[in-house]
Amino acid sequence: MASGSERVVVVGVDDSTHSYHALETALDLFFTPFKSNPQFKLVVLHARLPATSVLGFAGPGTVDIIPLVEQDLDKTADLVKKKCTDVCSAKSVEITSLEVVEGDPRNIMLEAAERHHASVLVLGSHGYGAVKRVFLGSVSDYLAHHAHCSVMIVKKPKAKHASNDKH
Amino acid sequence: MSEDQAAAVKETSAVEKQPETTGAEAPTVTITKRMMVAIDESDSSFYALQWVIDHFSNLLMTTEAAEAEGGLLTVVHVQSPSHHFAAFPAGPGGATAVYASSSMIESVKKAQQEASAALLSRALQMCRAKQIRTETLVLEGEAKDMICQAVEQMHVDLLVVGSRGLGKIKRAFIGSVSDYCAHHANCPILIVKPPKEITT
Image 1 (cartoon, rainbow over the protein chains, first blue to last red):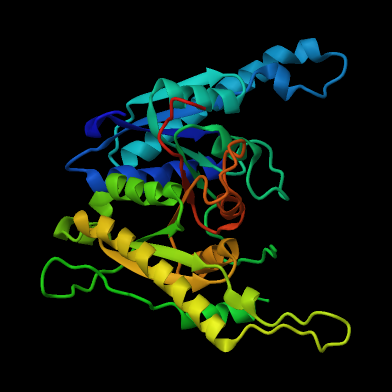
Image 2: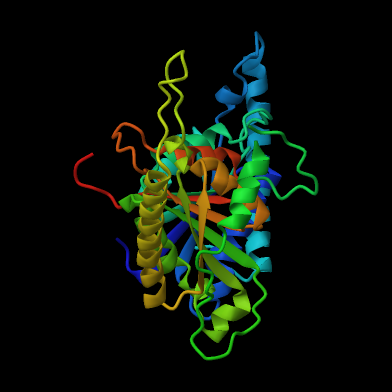
């Protein structure tokens, strides 16, 4: 186990409000209260989907669109990086490592958690694919089950109205 | 369905509500970060409690700096309902109904309460050792429902659960209560995994 000053928090972000909310929540819990005595290191990770997975259902003519999709994904990745940097500097938190890795977000997150010896993995829910009926996104669900380190799942920002009927 | 349980929450909610303070005064701390840890008899849940104590001490301690952060740790234990031991009418004639005697019910309840008290005092000792601002809570009912209800009613900011509870099924990577709460609790949830074991 890492020593006290080496504890790492890995936050996974995609380009969704839930992710940024998760990042802010992580900052509020792990970083802002410790300003004078930083106890954790922050790693922010964006899993950039490969173009082929995005185009899963496309028919003929796919080959032509791939470069455009790639470009779009790159733009998104840059946007995410910038936004995370902004969110963190607004709270005066230094990002130890901001990474963009291409591939399946589930494996990327697991691998990053191992690599950084993370104490905790933080994710928004409803990350990839807005499947409204599934209250917990599939990536966060997968990681809750399979990660070896602790997992914090941050749900959507508190809605004014809880009109959900769950049983 | 929820009416009874809501009543149960209010009735049993104050087994021991003692905010821990270092000094003689009881400071009025505005609670801005209420964390709730659910415990049962499993090691996993106590490991989760220890994890919270280790990682969030700056938020939760009874020092001035921490009090400014407004953290409070609520340790909750849910007792399974004791109505299982109520009357069991058996047989078509009705004459063969088996009733648990009231003294038996009493002793079961008493045993449950003692078990809860023991668990909570163990939890409190862990918190006191690190001067954590803590309160305890005992609820009665189905663990997963009661925990989610408590989260809503008490405006919990972070729910912390262990990953595996009393059902030690090795293939299940996360226990059913933790899984249910991950899906249904209205607040961020932190699932604490046990430390890496050599054997998987």
